[in-house]
Amino acid sequence: MKPIPVGPAANATAVFIVGGGPSGLAMALLMDRFQVPFVLVERNAGLTDHPRARGAWVRTVELFRQWGIERAVKARGLPDDANGFAFVESIAGHEYGRVPREIDLGQTPAWKCTVSQDVVEDELFQVVKRSPWGRVHHATEFIRHEEVTGGIQAITRDNATGRETHWSARYLIAADGAGSGLRHQMDIAMTGPSSLAIMNNDYWQGDLAHLPSVRQVGVFRIMPGDPEVASASVLNTNGADRWLTVTKVGDGQDQTPPQRSDAEVVRLARAHSGIANLDVKLINRSVWRVSKQVAASYARGRAFLIGDAAHRFPPTGGYGMNTGIQDAHNLAWKLAMVLRGQAGEALLDSYDAERRPIGQANANFSHGNTVRFMKMEEAFQARNLQAINFWIKDVVHHSHSIGLGLGFGYDEGALIPDGTASRGITLGRYDPSDRPGGRFPHLWLDLARQRSTLDLFDRDFIVVHGPKSADWRAAAHDVGERLGMSIGTVELDTVDPRDGLEMSLYGAVLVRPDGHVAWRMPWIPVDPAASLAQALAQILRLSDTAASGRTA
Picture 1: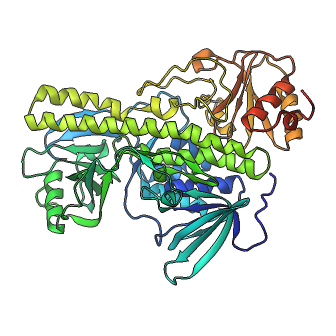
Picture 2: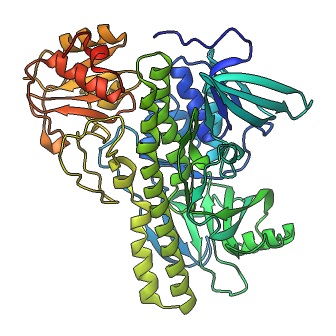
Picture 3: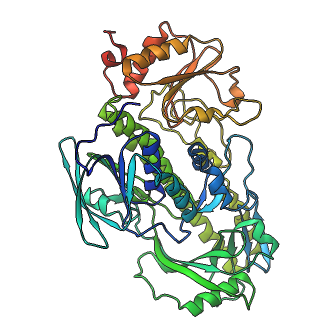
């Protein structure tokens, strides 16, 4: 890889990341993988000690697999068969119904995991803190920034000493959460309602490991028979004795209501568990607002929004953390190629074009799940068993969402549409496709089922082609030499439309480092090298002559 120039100053870097949550840490990990110098600052003194978001969905776990942390994350989550919903009067009491877990149909090498945000942050940080390419500064407040010629200047403050530090970087990443101060400095508005409800998170310890359902259920939706007991969602964080109770305590326009006392939280935990004398210990608590907002733009100048700084979803669906990590995955390879001079700066415009529609789609999905729970609440209050049964069955569209998680695609951006029509998304079903914009399908490349096609896509562009196609290896080598970049090639033994591969035995696709198809050529072109060079020039925002090395 080409080295990235960052300037002679000690406080100079290529990418400056504000925020050390899952999105910021994912960006730092990716900068390490691309060997891009980075600095990450986080105002808190360390990692979160609260579960917060929960659930690493399929595409995110595929990335964890590639980054070498899948096993460690899964070892700290719930078993694969404990990711469904149960609707109960209490955890130990009457159960109205259950939504079964989503079934792994073999369309991915890495199935999803019910795991909490604090675990994800910790495992990402274990990689980032060892990076020779970057530094992490906790207890460091980001103060302000300004854009200058060729980069940005930023100022931070050490929370312990008050000492201010001046930094210079080529690009700035805002990963500082839902209340992003950096987004406000960038003067980027959020669109959509900022406050739909006020919620309490109560994180508590109580041993329920003796209950069989604890090993089978990821979320207990508590619909108590006693009107004095608030309904709630109790999230199973470790399958034994740590629980996160989420309750609505106010409407969206309310001021923050008075907090429950510790004694009231203990009483509520016992009522929700169904065990009157349960030994309950409070771990920590938080108050937050449910929002459905997406930034009007994901970038301004040399600064980019990722994660909750870019979008704020209702928690129903679990797409907040996942979308943020995937934001970083989309942006990272583009930053690396621009910094190395392998792509034009206009490539970075594709980040907003690609990811903002995904943020909006996931916000809409999450809000739809919230409405479903409101309808369910009404059915329980009316004690209408037929309505209760209907809404419990309908929750399958909430928890079985592989079609959304893997089937999303980009309609415009760093890709070349080929004129074929989008097939749309069915929430509970994923239809693999090699159509430009979508994730290239997973196929096992060995009989031991250890190596997936997804393992091919990491740092470089890859040409995947059929067994009767052109000599793409020679073409890729030729074009890569001209561009000063590595372009890999892989020949598939078979090309089966049932696997979502429509490029034909004679065709090829160009896949980006993030695993999304950038270009599809379903037949043998007259001049493969010229066709590949022209495609890359368009994708990377290069001039045709820069890519081809000659006048077309």
